[in-house]
Image 1 (cartoon, one colour):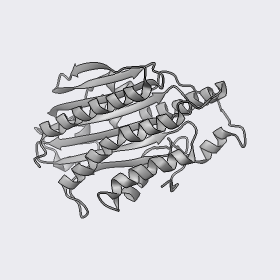
Image 2 (cartoon, one colour; image 1 turned 120 degrees about the horizontal axis):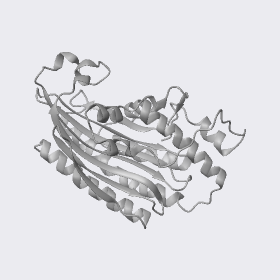
Image 3 (tube, one colour; image 1 turned 135 degrees about the vertical axis):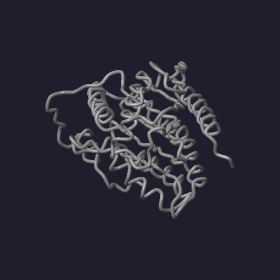
Image 4 (tube, one colour; image 1 turned 45 degrees about the vertical axis):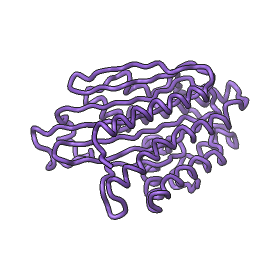
Length: 306
C-alpha cells in the first residue's frame, strides 16, 4: 500500500465524517456545523462542532492538514520529538490529523478525547502519533473495564507489547502534576511511531487506523449506558469542577494545544477542547465516603482496568 500525504489526509476526512454521523445518531437532536478554514502559511482544515444537544453539550471533531517551513520553536526546543540536528534551515513539514473532544450534558456520561496525527518533514523523517483517553466525572468500574478492554483488543491485534506500553504512556502523559492526579482513567497514548523491532511503518499505520475507527463504537456504547441515569444539582457542580481540571491540563500541559498555538493554527479549533462551562471553588474538599471521594481515589497511575 502506498501511504502518501493525500491518502492519509483523505482517509482522515472520511473518518471525521463517519464519527460525526455516529455521534449525531447517539445524540438524537443536535447536528454538527461545518467550518472550513485556511492557514496562511499553508494548508487548512475542517472544523465540525456540535452544541446544545440531548447528550452532547459541546463537542468537536476537527480535521487539519497543514504544511510549510518548520517552525522555529520545533528547531529550538528539545522537549519536542524532533532533534535539533535533524533540521536544516530550509526544512519543511506536513502535518495532518483528527482531534476529538466531547463534553456531555450529563455528569454521568464521561468526557472523551481522541487524536490521531501524522507528521512528515522534507528530509524524509515521518511518524504517527495519537491516543484515546476517558475522563469520567464519576468513575464506574464496569465502564472503565469496558473502555480499556476495547483498547487492549485493538492493541493486541497488532502486537502484545502495545497495550501495556501505550497504557503506561497515557498514565504518565495525562497526569496533572500540580494536582497530583490523573485527568481521568487514561487509555492509550503514543508518539513518533515509525519502524522498530516490533512493527514496521505500514504495520504501525494499520494500528493507527484501527485506533481511529475504535472511537465511535466505544463512545456511543458509553453514551447508551449512561445518558438516562438520574443526577442531582450536586452531581452537576462536581461535573463543573472536574471540567476545571480538564481545562487546567489542556492549557498547561497538552502538547497538541501548544503545537497549534505555536504554528499559527486556527484558535477556535485549537480551543474547541475547552468546555462551555467549568468551575473552580477555593479549597474544595469532598465528603468522606462520597462518590466524589471514590472517584478521586482512582485518579492515579498504574490501575489495571483491563
